[in-house]
Each structure stands twice: as structure tokens, then as C-alpha cells.
Amino acid sequence: MKEKNSGVQETHIEGRNAVLEAFRAGKTVDKLYVLDGCQDGPVRTIVREAKKCGTILNFVTKERLDQLSETGKHQGVIAQTAVYAYAQPEELLARAREKGEAPFLILLDGIEDPYNLGAVIRTANLAGAHGVVIPKRRAAGLTATVAKASAGALNYTPVAKVTNLAATIEELKKAGMWFVCADMDGTPMYELDLKGPIGLVIGGEGEGVGKLVRERCDMAAAIPMKGDIDSLNASVACGVLAYEIVRQRLM
Image 1 (tube, rainbow, N blue to C red):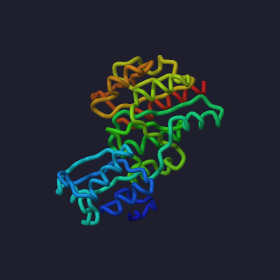
Image 2: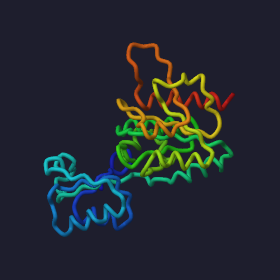
Image 3: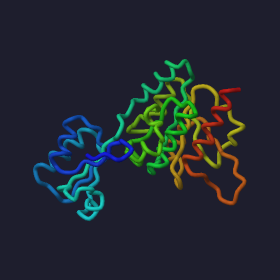
């Protein structure tokens, strides 16, 4: 592993022994890239460890591995690890209790751009959110790029990674939370009551919030728009809605 000038560790581990040791040391590996068709013993062992840990497996061509490689010595496997440890959703609620505040969480559905994720974490910190929740699949992980884009906020704002975002929302509802998702066809945000224990759900550009997640939200909030295009960047939309929640909490 090598260091960037920012002091944040790079998140790629290459080579069979190094990747296997990362799993055995308990490192959080978000994604594993494996040479498609490679079936020798060491690679099978690595794949088995990845499956036990719930790591996302990507079987790719040698050309793709060569593109991802920084050393040129990947030996058919590259692991993408998290720079920071992930929290559990319960820890985010506990954080709110410790502060004596109603929980305020930001949940991301399909945000794959690391710069957007970093910007959301930065907004979450400044808006007083108690944490961010991301799904395991179709989502950027806590890479060095995310850490840099968060401008240091990742040191203070916990991020939980969950297997099923819709199921997590149902569990958090049992803890008394309400959920609002960003939706251009929703109710204008100024007409909604966004006070109290709330989760703000933001979808990815293009597809927005997925159907199953949308169905579990209690409200859908639309941001008034006066321009010639019909959508905002996901992190910008998150900022606008997060600060409407802040405004209402201060009333």
C-alpha cells in the first residue's frame, strides 16, 4: 500500500499474498477484482475468503486488471479496501442520543461517484447529521478519493454500510424515525414537516431513489426549480434538503 501526499492511504492492495493477508487481518475489503477464469489454489482461497466476508466480487479481464493496477504486479487479484472503518446503523442512533438530539441520518441509494459521496459526508457533518448510510452494492465505498472530497469530514461523521437499504429503513422506523426521499414529483419541500427524528434519502443521478426504497419512505420532497434543466447533482440536492431540515429544526 502506498501513501498519497494527503496522508490518506491508497485503497488498492495487489498480489495474491498481500490480498489474502488483508482478509486474514480483518481489513474491510469493499470489492475484489479477480482475473476471470483463474482457478488455481491461491485464487480460490482468496475468493472463498471474500465470500465469507460479503465482499463484492468482480471477475474481469487481464486488460481491466492492468488498468486498475498501480504496480503492474497484481498476479490476477486486486482488492479495494476501505480507508475508514464502517459503523453500524445503531451506532448512528446512539450518537444522536449522546448529543440529546432527534436522530438525523442521510441515506444514499445508488451514489457511485466517490466525489459525490465525499461531498455528501461533508454536508452531513456541517448540517449536524448523525451519520450517513450507504448500501453494499451500487455504491462508492470509503476510498481515499472519498476521504479527500469530504474535506476532513469523514474523520467526524460515521458511515454505515448495509446489505439492504429498504430493510434498514424498516428497522430504523421501529426506532421512531420517519423518512423523506428526494423526488422531483414529490411535495414541495417547504410544505412538508421535516422536524423530529428523520432520515433523508438521496438517489443517484439519472435513476433517483429505487422503487423499493421509495415505497418505504413516508414522504417525497421536491426542490423548487426555476431553470431550464430538471435536476440537480445528487450532493447539491442533498445539501438543499439537508438545510431545509436544519431550518425547520431551528424554528
